[in-house]
Image (cartoon, rainbow, N blue to C red; front, side, top):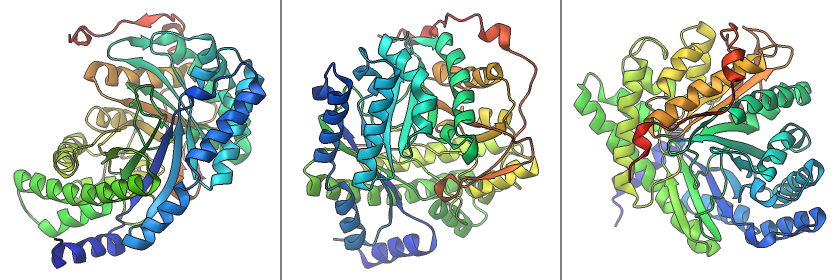
Length: 452
């Protein structure tokens, strides 16, 4: 039986503190769509997505009305398309991207993820074809998201793939230059990519997943920040306890929605991802949580320690609320999507180097960071390599989603609107790492990868 106080508190969190369900994501396996003919393969993929997800948006809207809980996005993730592309050329793979986009548009979902490749140990023919097609695929679609896993703690780091991704990101920026190079906002490079992630741009339906599944991503930075402000001048142990209890409540809302969606769609419930996902809305910022803890501005000294405590407390509270926690599950720090991060970047308090340090203790990485459009591709590859090495060495997921904004320089601001927010163009170090990147090959897995 729900106590009236708990109901009223949840209503307050929704109305006043920006609590929402960030996404209901349906994962769909495409293995049974295999076909040598590109057109028939594209048609089979479209038909299966339409069949499996035909009720996803209506059910999401019904749950919103029933419980009064905003569900911001309804999304789909599919089997990594590189696994389907072994006998296709670039035109054939791009045809699949267009088919994904058409299905997403016809179903009314916000994004569809899975235009992806897993290349941590090397590239198959299908993986290389898909990777080289990414710029054109993202330029000719609106809702398709792409990801490439270039490293894992078990396999080490594929430097050939990282070098290629620097070129691909630059080309994607150029082909979408008329829209602030926004193609790069739908492209992420991973280490240790999870197979059950409901968040974009990195979602794909992993090879160990069931035929279909429902994964839910919650949010609630505003709720946590408000709880910390109400607590006043308490010590760190008390602060951690407050964050844990708040994360528990947020995750219970996600658990409720996930089970309801699973039952209504007759699809297995996978996981709740309890990541604190910010938005540009006032009061819905991870940076503001850190500032509520006592920092003058996010990015100042002490930020990494505060973020480490926040992330730990969120995880501890979340795992007590649901037996099925997965995905990324931490605190996101996407610059353009977080009002406090935007302000700190504009003020110069927050740098890429500081963000890199912060990603050692949270999810997920250097995310939604705009950099000058003339940044050399080797520098982009080196930014990826640095961030990916943190994930490999620490046995965690890390990722890079940078946007070299064509025609923009440091200090410019690019407005993407919606959840993508606005991105202040941040400076990078331009001393060349080209010789290092062009060595190619593989950085071996760390010794702690031998955990058997």
